[in-house]
Image 1 (tube, rainbow, N blue to C red):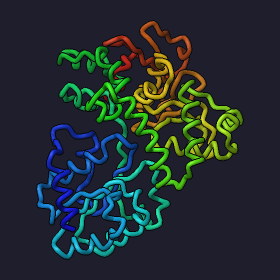
Image 2 (cartoon, rainbow, N blue to C red):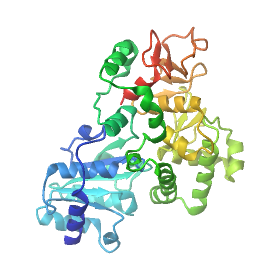
Image 3 (cartoon, helix red, strand yellow):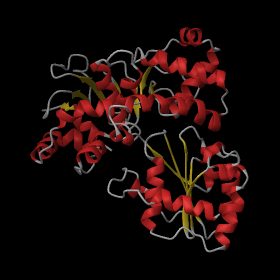
Image 4 (cartoon, helix red, strand yellow):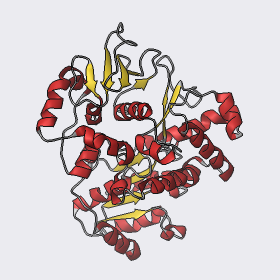
Length: 398
């Protein structure tokens, strides 16, 4: 185990504690088994290591390891936990558990056998905790890490701190909120386009020049490795899922015809539903369904969006259309904190109550003027009036 301790110390040494994702303070460290799921690239590994580094304990008391480490080709996780506990270990932090075949059963055994250990792990967003072999849903406190909000991007890129706002405050006080943020020197419209291009994933700031190429590589890893490990898909299925994502990305918002989509990717119609669900759980797409439907893997979505603007820039063959970026932005900043569903009037129904239409500064209330609780989310303005709300402010909801 000395090998694992040494690797952990090397990995933790350069970890910076200055910028922390929104989820960091929400994680209850008193829980003995904590899971963090989310899309690849959102910063799960960094968050995990920050949590351990903050504890400031020696490696023999707390260490980090990735479950795809070659060490685990010849060693079992339960045996590592037993030896670690026997020698006074307390914090066992495990990255990418879905890469280790029997992870759920062994984590259950560790939880039940070693109450003195605190285990935190990360896994693919495809993982469904309720269906794991070890029945971890009753033992693990699981959090989901989403892509960055506009508010977080400003904090990360510009070192500016702003507190999140609630939707209720946004709707009732958006003028005062906007003026307050502008008084602090914020220039939101100046930074919004860069957020569309680069803002969804923290690693974009390592190098913006190569970011979209890296993001395309990340997408390949999600489909070829993460889905293979967490959902058991094979190479042929992976190719069909890639074809589906490519087809969607060229015409988002995508109104699906399931028969046409099945023919286009060479798949059975029932499998098309399954593949859409994989892409949704991988956080590569968002689906918009009617409020009357309870979403499940066999629900036909009314519309399909890419999960964020950065994906649009990485996947679209031409420069992404501005209207699509606007709608994608509002959807991604609302979800998952608020329930977003389809409405025949307007673009989005939020929390089964509020109707939103998204557009540029000349957008009028024509489509939704007679509907109660209807609002416009307007790009290219800094301050709104009445029910006309600046679109950039939706980036402060989370």
